[in-house]
Image 1 (tube, rainbow, N blue to C red):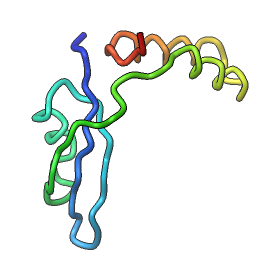
Image 2: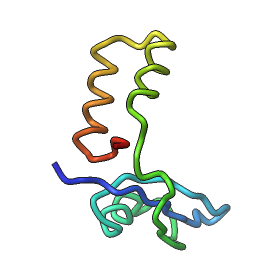
Image 3: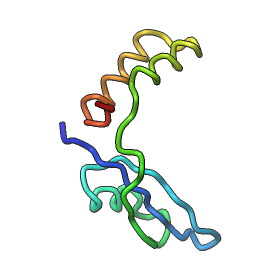
Length: 85
């Protein structure tokens, strides 16, 4: 699987400007994901590029998420390269 990068995509939907945070393999893919949801204003690297999976697992356990669900979420983030090392 491709390592993902996190982007902030800014769009104008005709009524307001909105920011959407998108994990994608490239800026082009982040823009394509948002296509049709408004006029593109800008795309910037997001400050969030990694996630503390131990802390996320703790939080999900505390909120009583099941083991299977936690495993899927954490593994997906790890595979995508978004794990804090």
